[in-house]
Length: 401
Ligand SMILES: C[S@@+](CC[C@H](N)C(=O)[O-])C[C@H]1O[C@@H](n2cnc3c(N)ncnc32)[C@H](O)[C@@H]1O
Image (cartoon, rainbow, N blue to C red):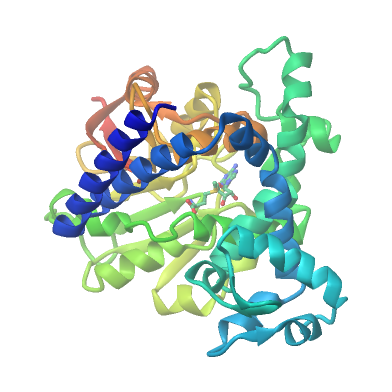
């Protein structure tokens, strides 16, 4: 690239940085980061960029090995540089192997090496001691990566049909699952299920809880028909219930019940968890394909990252099992999902789109696709709440008539 073009990108990056300095907003942070990425790309030779891109799985592999060798908890305690021998003793592991793995981490700014074979933590390596971020890395590496690798072969075998059958996705092809649903497969593999549920907790990482930006009081809580006995929020496909716990923290005075619904294996994993008990969250086994919604007349039926797992045909089944429980004029459906822009979507939603395609033939949807889905199912979008950057939006909907 011409030096003048790089100069131009540098100026745009500086101006994005100045905007961030003056507003300290999340949007300006994302814009500055995107601008800096364009600048870094422009400074890189295309051939080197491709080489590094193709090597990305090796970096993730090194992080996974470091996790397994228990390097990060030891490192994050450190106030002075930690010698290699101390880190190698954590597992214990061969010091030469640890040195090679840590070299990758240093080269990728995941840890610091202030002196030869002496290490210090960074914000990134400290993050790798937290359950949700460990879950993100481990679930994507162990459960998704093998399927990513097989996806081109799978798509060729289907003559590049867009996958829409959750029982015929790259996951089944890769793991020889026959017609076993991906979530049932997870439920049969407790370690994989635990990694996946931590991954879902991690999806929240550093993002706003919906209660921090959606006008919950105005759109949900301020209604005369709400009482302590009314189901307030039914979180369908809730996983470990982190969204409900976050809701209770933000609205401790809200009257009405918070109900967590998921498949029986997930409920077995979460039932009795202290954080759920403390937040007064009820649990309910529910299979949204095979049962009619058992909680009648809730104020809000909340789905987060659920509809994106399913094709329109499957989503119709979910809505058909939900609608009989909804009270007209009172019950709402709140779906916290990406609402893709028509153009220039950011990297994270696009990567998520690939992950749901591989796992269960799901898809991220543009606003028009959401609109078509709701209309075809006798539902009406009250409002699409979009957010800039990589945050999830909210589709607020109700029965059409
Ligand atoms: C992508 S996760 C989302 C979890 C959580 N809502 C979140 O965003 O963190 C999808 C959830 O749907 C649940 N699920 C899958 N199939 C289901 C079914 N048939 N009935 C009820 N829940 C189901 C899974 O167990 C999982 O917890």
